[in-house]
Amino acid sequence: MQKKAPVSTVPANPANWSPQSQRSVSAEWTKEYTSYRYNCWRCPTSAVFSAEDQRYAYEVKKAPIDQKRILCEECWRRSNQIAAELSKCEEDWAESKEVLRRDRAFLERWARLLDERDQYVPYRSDSAKKNMLAKLLRDA
Image (cartoon, rainbow, N blue to C red; front, side):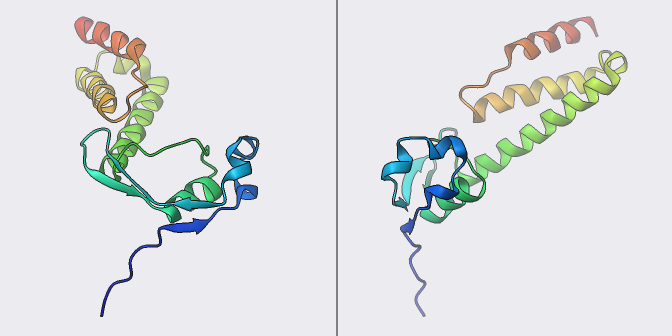
């Protein structure tokens, strides 16, 4: 029994896009999504942004229509894990700043996560937090 090849195109329904995307030029001319291959920005692995994944991203999750994939599935998952861990660091910091400012392990972990995130996202370096953590680590 032969496996079916993945569908390379699926119909697009711009009426299901986010309001911002519906106002874009793409709403006028996008009739279908077409699978395309790209190389991961982080690990240069070849990956595919399938037509069905595009439909889900734009019509269900309401991602901006001009959003393009830059990470393979594995790197994308790790990027999301890092974001969740950074969010937890922010929450912990907001609740217990006075105690955590002397917690070297917490500060080092937070700084490592910020550095690691820079490997996955080419445009969101948080130099202010990195500088704050470097100063706190010098003082800890």
